Image (tube, rainbow, N blue to C red; front, side, top):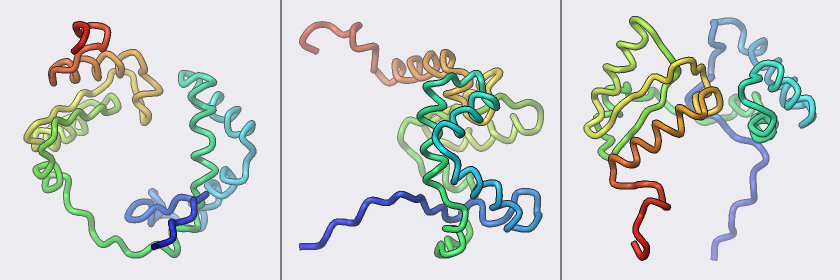
Length: 166
């Protein structure tokens, strides 16, 4: 009988973030991540509330532990993931009903997002007005409404709308 894997308190990120986004030294990119990794729960929540007040206290309390689980130096030992296929190739393979909730975008970026999403055989994209990187936290009501509409289109209504015994 194989032993079960021990729980992990760090997440290994592969295939993303292997270079600093702006092309600077990777060590300089990792330094603030490591500093954040070593902050207390209270410090992380306070920083979250300051930088993202629309999220609210409860969301920041859920967010904070994830920041302490990611260690920026795990990337160094991560196996090479190889090049990721283009979104246009990946999206054509997804046959399940798919909804992409995306930060509000304009112009070329919006057209690019919509072009990629159009490759989904059974999917669609919704650019959520006023939302940034974390759509569900920054536009919670619109996220819920959009998800309910999507699920209703799949035959899933609100549980209280279903007849008894269904």
